[in-house]
Length: 360
Image (tube, rainbow, N blue to C red):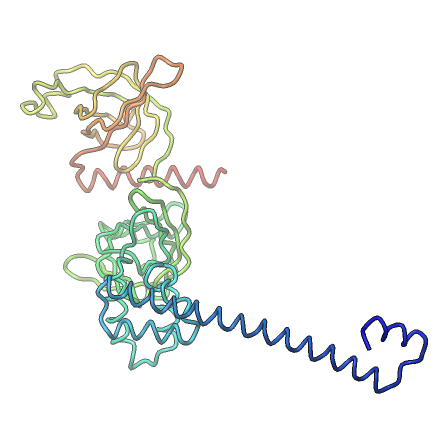
């Protein structure tokens, strides 16, 4: 009896109970067969994908020169969450960082020192401390020694620090300069971290101070890592618009190597130009003529004395004519800044940027 005959018989109430059960059973068997075939096909696809992932993982591990212990640690993670994630552990800094957090969270206290050493070494071999330019950071575990950080405690209270040591558990930083008494450097204090990654972006996050140590070199802070970094301004330096007048001295090319800064400043009349924007490492100025690349200049960034900014020397790195205007936009890179000068510039830019953010 076919399906049409069954429906017709059902409507006419001429189908026996046995016939009804037989047809329902046949339909059920067909559906089960189709479901099993689909399930089997999916299993075969997953197996093929996992086999391919394992192969790619092995190739990547060999190319990166990973040790057997490092490879086995990631392979165990793949067995727990699926082999298809294995290539990502080697190729993606985000996936690797997730793996590190999970591994350390699940480990016993006695295993932590060894795991920290192995994972740190693996991260370095994979090129994830720091990652290549253009790749977004996942956490402060990826920072390299020498990175400048800013610890922000309030709208107008922050200090500059430098990363000295990084492992998978903690971040150790050196406070540069004097710490105001109003800034609470104490274990348990939560601070906002701001830092700029050259040719990438500015990042912010939150860290917890675990230890404060006063040593001959200065004050060292040990912090928990910031796992939730926020990628903000995509620029080489913190940079704010200025649109104010400053003084410019152009060093004569033929005498550039013989003239001391005071000779240039005392024996040449400066010209007034517009400071378009300013960062801790350079500035953009607007003037009525073009300056060649590599031209040496001096800038008095604070002619009125309102901001306490220094006179800085710099080199022209780019010069372009403003469309439709008889003026040039010139980018200047500051040269040989003293730490105190750089501190003043960074503080000025940082404070102005925060004021703009609050106003917005």
